[in-house]
Length: 258
Image (tube, rainbow, N blue to C red; front, side, top):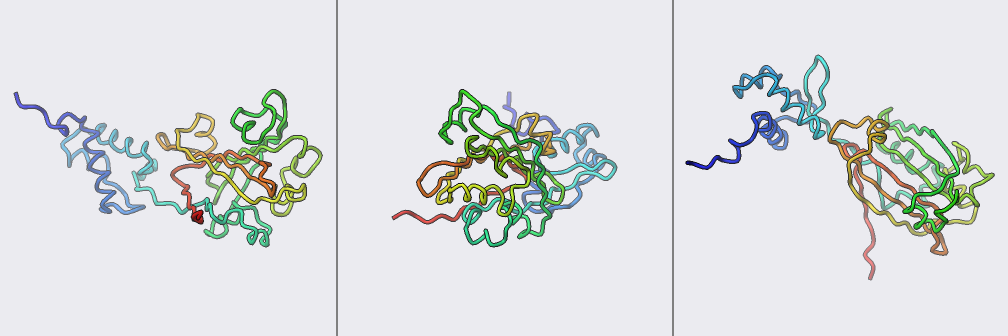
């Protein structure tokens, strides 16, 4: 008995998806190009139309194509970076009066929008309490949740945690915190950012995150757990960024310690 080859063991839909994925990778279908119809794929591969539809669905779930009802499937266009690590918090950028996200979006010709669905005093999650050096047993933080959009497309969920004892009664409790955003108000409180620590990981989104970010099935998120440290080396703000991985990249240029 002759052993089956790996390709013959694959379901027909996966074989079609794999070949289309390879063609996209080689540039045979460029960004924005329309893939052959389900009928054309079925004819080409001698398969049923629902098999071709399953192959397209696989590619869509992997974030490689978008399916537009009545129009067909199109190769997703690559997106530009939205988070630049090296100069994101640079003092020179403060002269613009813009928050880091608004400045990044402006540089890329995007129209930014920030919705603030909630600002509340809360008991912090364990990882936040540890990094902010606050109690995890009582409502020791203010949690500001922001939803960020570029050209009306959701790109990230931003959950910022500040010490309640510092934020209470200040503009940090308001959706509009004034020029330079929350960092301007934190400087008013004596916290000058001199160092940052970003912990980066990739994971699949929660159902709530997928809904807010309008994620296609199979598209992961990048999570950045950011800690700001002041002139005394003390943490004064911790933010959890949840980015759409299909719309976000991270660029860091850092000096090498000698």
